[in-house]
Length: 476
Image: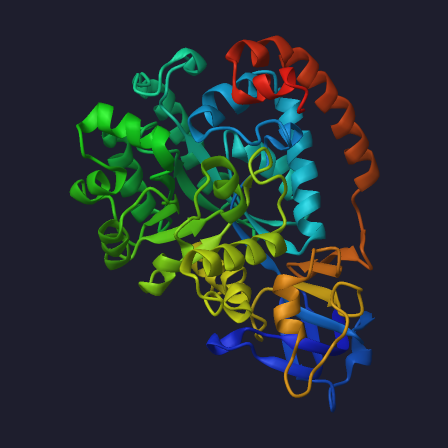
């Protein structure tokens, strides 16, 4: 045995239950779990590394199903804006001044933040994602689902376009991105920590012809197509202008036979009940990003309704200029609280469902549920330990019920994470990274972000978003 954690509470989440074990031990050999069960009768002393899990909870690492870490240095740069302005007038003028080196630095910052708060699997969606995997994810020993953004929108200055003015498509741009996406499967085919998906950005940004190509390639690769679907008013206006009044993204995808178990649809908040029903019937998966979509669109993503229809749903954080950070503990709490308010039902989306949503359900959406998402013998050792004696989780009660189940969802901040193990390797030990210089990355990120904002100032002012007016009013 390489690692043993003993005398701990364990939350296995196996067999569609919580799987609570008191005074349990978890054993790891190589990259896999070899024991999970009672401490009594198990010789943990044979392990090379023995961790005393007293007053701790062991649970599966969290699965972030949709994340863009590349714009992390723009955190706080596009908040409290009208949805129609967010992309073209908010984030766009700033993003023009972000370099390739900035993207790497921002990604390092984003991954550090997420690992520190318990995330072990990232579904990274980015341009030139191969570089992020090689320069950030693999050096940080994190599990990543690499998805190359495929976008055919030409380089026209979108900030100057009215919402109903169609983006021009450049199909050659899409072909280049698709080739990059295909290359991922070859480059990382023998890399245990990396799997790959196809990433057409959205129906208003990619032609139907290209989407059909991607669908065929995804099926051939036994992979999936990860696409933003029905993301608010801006997309709706583009779809109606391109395809006709009354049309919608889901209607067109269904008509073109682009719904199925090969499709992972992100956001989906501009869908009606019948559209969600057909998506579930066709076995399409869904990912919701609660904090991001509430912040950017002022809408609660339909995670609850999709799951109640029987659909497979995971959660993600999207990008830092949207929700502010990449903390899945916050996402669990956010979608549970918003759903209770929306449904006027305090029993909606209880804590135990949130824990499954952020672990095994996310793994299922990404096609990784045979390897991760629960603590079972033979699965990959992606594990976090939580300090139950942290002030935010105190008191700890186990009779007549386990109060740490709701407390993890509604009270935890992520700072309670003590240890993070990914693929059998200790990445975080006692709250400190084992091989990563966190302090230097944070210092570099702050210095470079100041330069980006200074360089982008005139473009940002010229775009004339609501934030510009807020600054003039002395509010920012």
